[in-house]
Amino acid sequence: MNVIIVKIICLLVSALATFCLFISIRRPPRGSMQVISLRGTFYMVISNIPGYRINNPRTVSYDPTIPAWDKVPLKKGETGRWINLFFLPIWFFQIETYEFTYTKVKNVSNLKEDDKKIWDIDTTECIIERTNMSDHFMHREEYATVTKNLDLRDLKGKLHMYTNVAMEIFNAKDALYETKSYMRTTRSSFDGQMGTLVRSKSLTQVNKIKSEGVDSAFESYMELINKSIPAVPAGTGTPPTPAIAEHIGLDKFGTKISKITFIDWKPADEATELLAATYLKVDKAKQDKKIKITEAEATAAETNLTGDATNRIEMEKLIRTGKLKVEFNADGSIKNTTLIPDANTKITAENQKAIAEQLAKLAKVKGTLVLGDGVLNTLNLKK
Image 1 (spheres, rainbow, N blue to C red):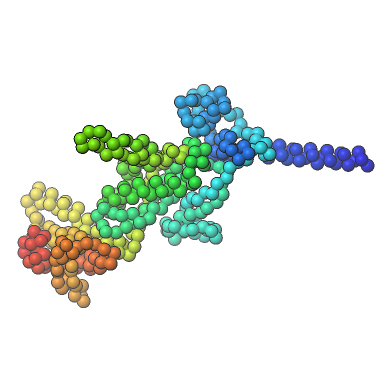
Image 2 (image 1 turned 120 degrees about the horizontal axis):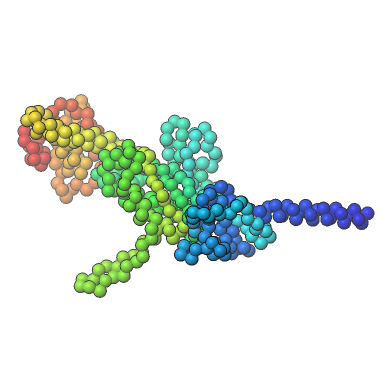
């Protein structure tokens, strides 16, 4: 009887040891890295990225000219690990996990209860935001990104922008330990630089980026997002040059943005929607007018066709800047125009909608515009 009990205990111990041995063999998901800790303290980064290795200071392949734990492309002739399996006994080592908030494109019929919809692409697809716990870091991944309430250069309004952002993690240790959330840090830096970019663009330029999908300006902004710049102390000359504060880039957190593709934009509110629709129509008229002037100079004909277009374009400009108030009759025709003194032309949230409504009504006015003398003088036009 005692022999049987001993055999059963031996079998149980053997089975438990085999199980522990089995789950102590770790292999990160393909294309990812994992951070390993030893009793709560960082120990190493393991990876399963074809064509790359980790610059591990405990190995003979360590390169001291490259930061420790960076992912490094394999050199010609290097083969890397034969198989990406790591023996890490569970009673000593653990894989670090973290909260991960990300965005992705989903079919509207496959949404989960906790998915937060942030953009409608069409009737079948949308962009959602989702939060999970993760035990690995993808070395390269693309995310559908929505940046909201960006100010435009030419309009007193805002827009939402949809881009596709390719993000890389080159140091999983820094991504985990140097910031509370590398994804939030990346999004915060990205959103700030996209705000700066959009403020330098007109709606026509924004539409051009949309039609082409890319913009060379993104490259310079990616440099600002990715690369840290050290502080510069104040100069000692007369007058002294001001000090420049340190710029913190994503390289401090082991991440970088490698590509930005502009997909779409939407007005952020109803007033901006009206302004945008009118602005684009006027901007097209400007382009048409330029073409007609060029043709007129070449053919010495039809120069009289541009007068009304000029009136409309200049009126739009005054209305958008708050310097002209236009009243309309019930049938939509212009009733009266009133010039506003410069001191009273500040654009506020309260009068923005009224300006948008004036622009929308003006766009529907047909025929040649008849303007008062005061407006004509301000526009530098003749009857």
